[in-house]
Amino acid sequence: MLAATVHAWLAPSHFSEHGLLGAGFLAAAVLQTAWALAARAGLSPRLVAAGVAGNAVFVAAWLLQRTVGLPGAGVPEAIGVLDTLTVAAELSLWGLLLGLERARQAGVVGGAALVCVLASGMGAH
Image (cartoon, rainbow, N blue to C red; front, side, top):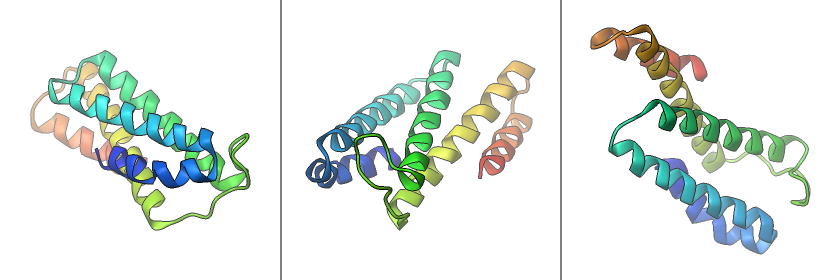
């Protein structure tokens, strides 16, 4: 929800820069909010896969925009505090979901699963 909130908050300013970029921010906010609400009901393997894939796409878009610029969105942007915080949240969730899925596949439950999830989340950083 942190990443969704930042995307929603910054969407208007990105619309003024470039309409497509603003639409991307708004889409990211909607998708991340929908995913978080669905995750509250339980993490199915399909929802975990969607979270992993979605966050990989968001982080890749951020990386492209900070290095070469997104197609049609102009020159690369400087790295700032809010985008760094957002990417850190996305990478943390990505790592936690991968760890959770590995624990599920291995049949690990309880405290051992928590250790796997936390270790995977730290590894993503």
